[in-house]
Length: 122
Image (tube, rainbow, N blue to C red; front, side):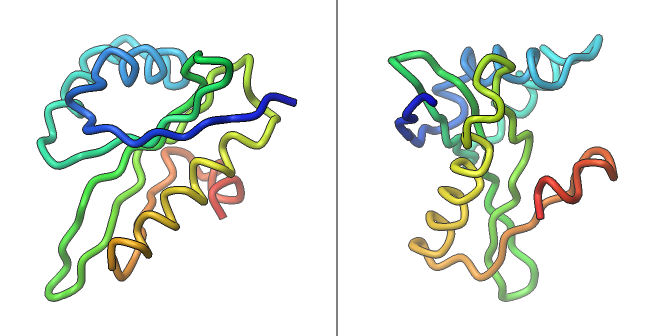
């Protein structure tokens, strides 16, 4: 089982890695454009996992404000096929949760793209 390293980057500065993982994990006719659009969100950050120097997965974080509450929206969490089933997805979500708590965010929001994913994110 690979050991993963974690890095957090401004999403715009990591647009190439975001696009590569996005297109592999969320294939669609518009995947590259969707990734580019998301990379343009100025205050978004991406948590990456790497294994032996290779980017293996990502979890995108977008700050949210709801009234006086501040939170983080987890978006497009994906692990490349060759790294699935090795704990990377859980590590990405746990890292996002720890980062949100450390930075004083009061909640994390997530909207699964498909109902079948609800249990995975839970």
